[in-house]
Image (cartoon, rainbow, N blue to C red; front, top):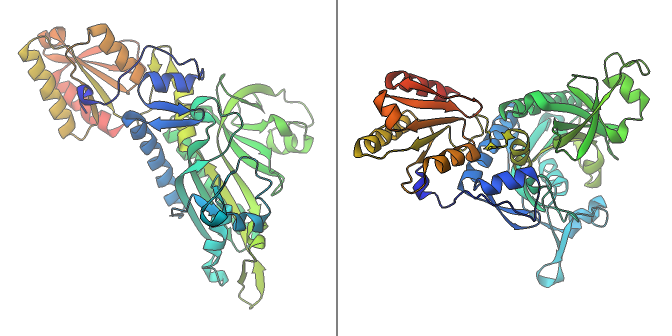
Length: 424
């Protein structure tokens, strides 16, 4: 992609309407644009990153054996009345449709997916089943804030599993938990994302959240120092939970540390709550009617995008992990002669031929400092520079975004390095 053809531009100005770090960085770098509180447009760079996050999630859900579906965002009141949630879900967008019919925009899809999937379940041979979707969701948040972290319109992957027994639900639940860990690892957040026990609400005693540690987080969690298991502040008074969760707690021998974090996913067991509401059962091997057990597994790709921007960035800009970055390489041309321009074009062509995604800064007007600042702000994993200096050395300057120093590589060595960048 030639930067001269990109429809967006970087900006030095910061918005006063949203002071969150992720919104400031993503807006300045030309990834998103705010339409109103909690509602953002995804621009070409932002959409590429979002699509890569969603593809990571899709691959890990498929590995669980879950099947992808796409459910309606527009939902009738009747199904919400059947579960008793029309008047209890306070973030539900409600409105009148044609014929004065009560409708809602889906913030979640239990009411849609439960009767749909269970309509295909007659016997124990039809279980277990799991389906997921990646869709735009809507929640009428009273205080939409923190950029992509708390929106009124956002992307969500929600998966629902259906089981013949609680034990089978438990087994799949553990597999889903492990799959979620893989998602965060691939998105560059594995080392700072904790499995966190939280209240299970009306469905179960506990649920699991995935909390990414950052000083900019809105949630408070407690963990044993250096541990990967945490407890949400709302359940920290539960001594039984502490004994079960924190190794060696034993009534208070471990001094828990308090930390700020961003919730980047949650999973919980719904038990028979929704199948019961729709009178869904299955026939067991003996011919009897049995209850169906459900699990729910949510992760917000757009929220994850914002979390990466919050956590993987510095005072210069974004620092994208390899699997999420819109482009692997940011190629910067400082060409001042036809020979230098030709060299830059040749590098762009050769990298592209190797299958490496390249953002090529071929702009003529901007000076060196502006181009390098834009590269840091946009945050691609590798920056390559072609200039009079590199041409004299018959090479190319390479600087990983996380590195403090660059190095000039001979051209042939650079081409070999390019293959490694593609593998990363």
